[in-house]
Amino acid sequence: MTVTARKNNIEKMEANIARVATSSTNSEKKKGGRVFLWPKVDQIILLRPVYELNQCLMLSTHNKYHIDRSQSIQAICAKEIGKNCLYCEASKEDKKLTPSDVIYVPVFVYSITDTNTGMKATYQEQGPNGEKIVKPESGFRVLELKEFGGIVSVFNSWKRRPSITDRDFTLELTKVKERNSYTVIHQDPAPMNPKIRAATPSLDAIEKRLLEALPPVESTSFDRISYEHDSPLASPTTVVVEEDDIAVF
Image (cartoon, rainbow, N blue to C red; front, top):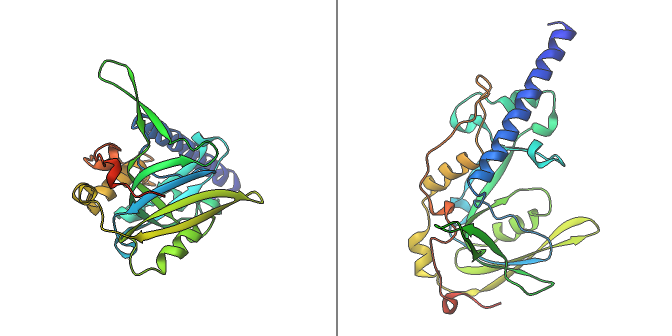
């Protein structure tokens, strides 16, 4: 292959990657983007893992950050579903696209509190008549655990425990010398709320939701792979837990 032909192939692949990344971002916005738990600085999150660490899904995932979020890439590797992967091919030229293993931990979020104001985090949802409904930021989410970055402290804390479903935890994210730092506080052991246990989505349902939220991209078609889903992860208010049932911190 000539230098010109190789350059043209790389440019074509980069254009396809940019198009797919933009399409995936827009798709996530349309679906509400309420699948993942993304901690923010100066927040305290009270949560309960609903699966043990060794039960959780570990999937090879491509992550490439871009200051323009529409150009960032976060996708499960197509090899996880037995297909050739566009991003794996592109990683031969762009090492930032090399996949890494991510553990996806399903959790139930009781509340998210701003440490500066003491206010509970909320979000807005459109009602049946077009009105805006304010709801607390709570429900089932998926926390991404990686063996690098600030989140590694959470991974190290949990992997040493015989169980992570036997109690609630609080996570706090702070900035230390421009780097993210997590504080993990273990609550006293307590039975899981039966309402949460009964509504916990199956691992199959979680995997389908992850594949939809972070769609793999085949190298042959450049088309996103879509998946049907029916999971409580898509609705953060599936379970209503009364205040008396929520651990105090």
